[in-house]
Image 1 (tube, rainbow, N blue to C red):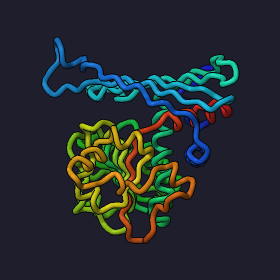
Image 2: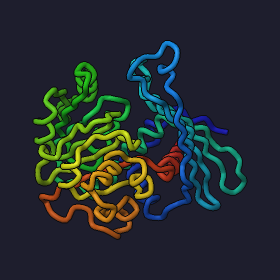
Image 3: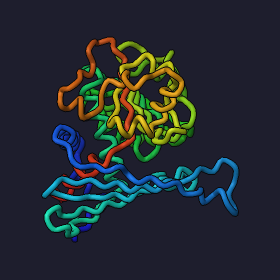
Length: 319
């Protein structure tokens, strides 16, 4: 059995190729059972814990193509890991033969996850953002942030990026790491002004309260919401949802798990019929994405095991 570490994925899963691979998988499909999601009490909430500690999550995500490959990801989400200098999400991926069931590869699931997640947002942007988008606002400074910046830049002529985070030091460090003469990246402390001036806004946080306000959104913008993966989390308010053409990665996942969607449904700001489509619909041409230059579009992802399988197969073939 082959072991594929994170360093190998940096080369094997370049964003242009990975976005194309995800597009092909969403077009053709695969078997994706409902993922197992289990809540684990926060390790900080018991003895030695403190107020404000968050519960952790264990995710089991299988997928397969008949006669092709079988894969399963085991992932954990520990929201309080940042205080220890650790990523909130960590994972391992096991790829197996769909003909014999034999294990083929054990893949670093953490790197696989951030790359396929960023690529899914970039795939949505291909259909939903304006083709002339040059200015990106990255909200969040975690492990996903640099991947989202680079993935979006693989699909649009983005050359100016602002980074906002609750910890301005982290925002400045990320900006310094990515900044170069032909690709300007800087930190900002003014979220509202940055949001008003961006062509694409990408959010990857663990926020439980809206960060992006609908009143800030400008005609022609695209809002990419990645971080709020439970019904209790949210990165946009009702006004943002009302003003936008709303799309999701998968209807089944987003309508049940994504706080930006479920809370808007509960308040009446959004109806299920108003969710115009998912990545299956967009890649198959079943729905249109951006109809007009001045449309405001919103994409909400929660992740799907289809993306993991597509990325794992590509990594196995290229490693």
